[in-house]
Amino acid sequence: MATKDMDASLERKSKQPGNGRAILIAGPTASGKSAFALKVAAECNGVIVNADSMQLYEDLRLVSARPSAEEEKMVPHRLYGILPASTAFSTGAWLRLAADEITGLRAEGKVPVVVGGTGLYFKGLTEGFADMPEIPEAVRREARALGDREGVEGLRNALIREGDREAAAALNDPQRLSRALEVIVATGKPLSAWQVSAQTAPFLARDECVRVVLAPPRPWLHERIEQRARLMLSDEGIGEVRTLLAKGLSPELPAMRAIGVGEIRDFLSGETGFEETVHRLTVATRQYAKRQETWFRNQMPDWQRVDPSQGIGADEIIAQP
Image (cartoon, rainbow, N blue to C red; front, top):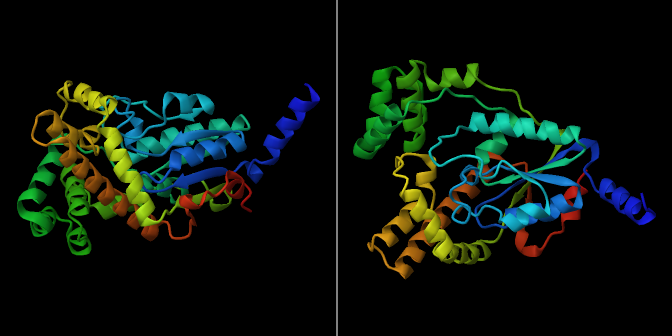
């Protein structure tokens, strides 16, 4: 090996996190996670592993803000665009794939750089996860319909009838109540019992990873969100949604509920004009980002916060003790 090449190789190795640690980068949508992960991976001989539930789907590269083909050539990317939109995918299934990827990368001397906005994926990696059973789509649909018709009280009453008084008393969020109802109807076993019996051990211990949440100022993030909304309405974004809709898939599938699909569908049908669609996309994405920020704040309070608007360098993350 030439001296220059050897020096470059040694420099890359010197920038790797000690003890083969993984680097975990979470953050709300439009916060610049993918670009930041690209810088980090390039500096530490890293491979980027997707932790965003929508970016798993092959059908919506632009609408889900998946890394471009050019970006994927700059450093290796894993678990992007691996599923058809017809697939419903669980957190447990992602954890199994991610664990395999991280194990393989470590064996190769690579640094796993796990990046995305799905908080439950990160929580499962670092704290363990209750690997719940698959719920039949008919059961899921019925529980959601009940929530739409009768709201929180209707879901609570249904949980009491089915025998899960604990969830009925403890939960206030319609989505979580609906989930508890799905579980007991499908399995005959309360959600709390599954959470205890199916809990997996954390895959990554605290000293095995660098944990970062991107936390941008709200005005900076909102500006980027509006830019993304307009990008979704480019010819490429509209084409992605048109092709997806032509498949005639169930509207209950996760990919069909992605932000951008319903809004662009209404635009294609003539129900909304261009600027109204931009507004709807912007509002929906802002609301989603706020939910993500709330999750990270409540569920991952001990992760380091980084302001991406300040141009923090990749070396500052890699060099964390």
